[in-house]
Image (tube, rainbow, N blue to C red; front, side, top):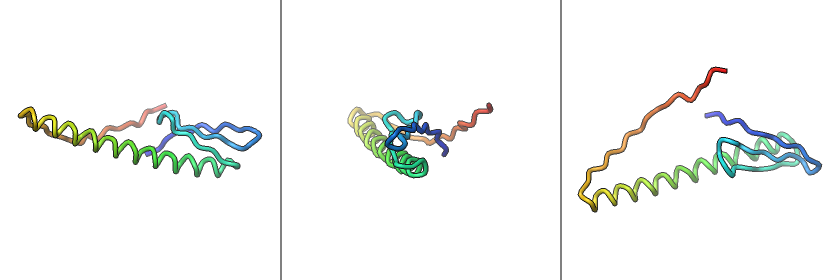
Length: 84
């Protein structure tokens, strides 16, 4: 998956932000370092979201089971490609 990132140059180097992922920021002394660091930050952020989603899925299954409901889960694919 591809994410756009915003680089902000300052006297200290570069700040990097991924607008699609709130609170996903990083920095680096050089442009390349900032890009490498935001790439790592995005990966960590997505791992965190996946972990939280798994926890929430477990909670919902347990809640459904305790209420006598049958809960089904399905994965769907979506195409996020936008023609510009």
